[in-house]
Length: 231
Image (cartoon, rainbow, N blue to C red; front, side, top):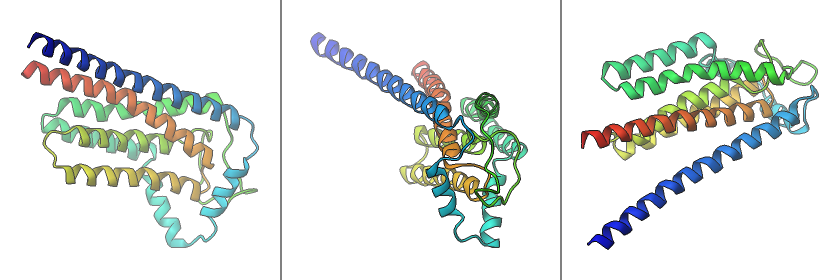
């Protein structure tokens, strides 16, 4: 019996260390990719694949598509994004999900992260020389602040849904699918509107994933600790 308990304890420790190792490896991978991408885009000239993706997405513009893409993009503007975060955070707080409320509220920090990176890398926005500009934008281009926020906010909701103990599997899948679709559509809208290059969007997504990885790990650890205390 003692040998069995010791074996289970050692195996549990191994799995725990393995998760930490995976987390560290994925974090380093995304950080390295982002650094390479940052150096790659640091000069102002658009890259061939940036031009290719923009041309493909803007190949058949229409007034209806312009409105739809502006709508998806509008959700990522500073004030709308802040309201979304605060409203969702308050909803969780009202139902006494304090940890979830703070986890969602942490998404406000993504705006500061985006601003600092934009200032440091200082990549110009796409111009009418290369793309069709549907929406005028401000600040620098890399990484995409909209995509960073979309990934952070909707990624946070995915983590909450998947780790939930009260949601059915079907609900977890549906919420994850909707949130993933919002991230993709938000990214597509930024390129279609001529606000960003493809590499800006990829950069925003990478930083957003890193953001959710770190804030999510804090949330999951605190949630696990609370569960152990209750037991």
